[in-house]
Length: 251
View 1 (cartoon, rainbow, N blue to C red):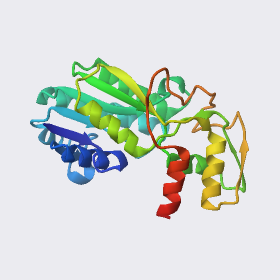
View 2: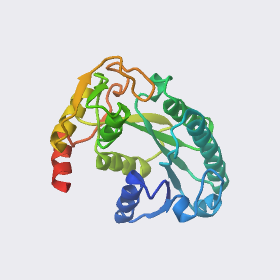
View 3: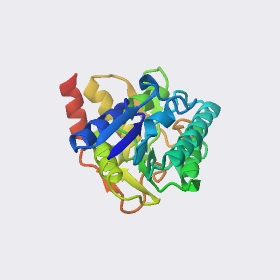
View 4: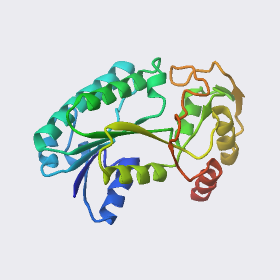
């Protein structure tokens, strides 16, 4: 089966391409650096020729509100139109758990707009919403500023390992379209501030994390439901402790 992975050279996409190839499929990575640009349409029709499934893992190069909305709306329209013309039978997309609950975040609004385009298209689809990947904690910490005392939300988060997401995407890609949204999360929930403390401690970073329920998370104030999945999500297997241990070994 020919499967085109949009964003197939990125963190998740490259691993998904490798996994699908190992399973005997023709998995084609598509990204600007392979000559495929879903914002301009360059190379899109050509790469989709003969594809049965498209997995959209694309992401905006800018998280500024207007830019990210323009990216997902433009890219989504161009890609879905090309898929319809090519006779693609299953559109798989990766989205974010909680996107529909964080309207104050421009990025989350853009992901909901992307999801709406998918649902309005006649192409059968499956949307996988994932919680935050483990390495994202570094960006969360960076967003809190440059001082020695950083205020971070105390809301619960359920971070997940990239390989757990790849395994779920591979299963979805090779299965029938759900025409629905499903969720995946890590195996344990913990407050964002606690996750940040464990990460800094493992790195030997002396900065102090202050738990602050009102600290914004990329423009949105969170509660314990904001970034956690609904009932009966898929669950990954890698814990925070597992990931931190692997990170320290890699360093």
